[in-house]
Length: 149
Image (tube, rainbow, N blue to C red; front, side, top):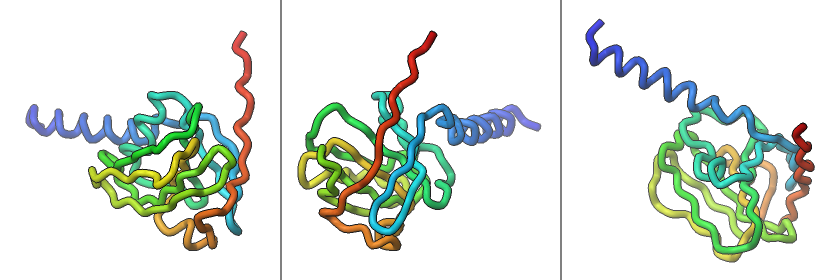
């Protein structure tokens, strides 16, 4: 095997591992519309910056919730994200203020139309499939962090 082929193989393996590396995120359940999701929580700046990048798939009825300290207009893009997603921008009262779809690897910015404190990413079409619309309330609780010894 040539040196170039070995480097390429190592990069592919690395990206595959990176796609699974977020298993350490805390999770909770979320209900919206007529559907229920198991969601990973992106709570730190590093977790939020990485989001769903490098993942090759997102399980059925799975998602990622980005949790911020305060409401403001938020913008997302799909750089290095390979899964088509739908995104809901959610205000501090847990009401959806904007929903849009995002294409894989698109570097265009998708911004909330109003300030939001939470952002929920799911597989593209999930919101439509479950009758979710702007104005709906998202029911979820952020679990308390366990104190470390």
